[in-house]
Length: 195
Image (tube, rainbow, N blue to C red; front, side):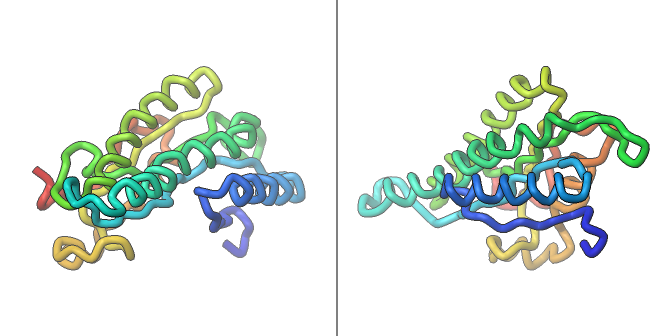
């Protein structure tokens, strides 16, 4: 924002160099104005259609999907974690733990046809988020998982996304970042089509 309190940052989560450069950029901005990193939202993701038994590029597409959707979360969290654990209470800041918010999917709870790579990656995010929560709790870092169903986004062109154009992950992400006691999981919106 123009006040400098929120800085959206685009980067290639599959590139260690891009992630490291982004972490350095944020660290320099924070140091330059006396702010602290409050939270990290891991929201990058791809959802190519893949299907078992088709051969061809199924393995390559699955590898790329896991690299972005799963390993990207690990890369970014590891790079920004030192900034989250430096939080301290002050007069103009509530202090308290840093927050990590991972955006998964309800597809991480139930499989769908023709979504092999995406569903596998979102199942992995479920376990990864639980493991991060346990590992980072002693450092005072809270970890939450957002589990969208069909929400309006550039990734979802399904009829259910069009039917619920106002469904968004924003309120859940805000709660995970700002609540005194954030939830571990935030199911969001419609789950039509997920058994």
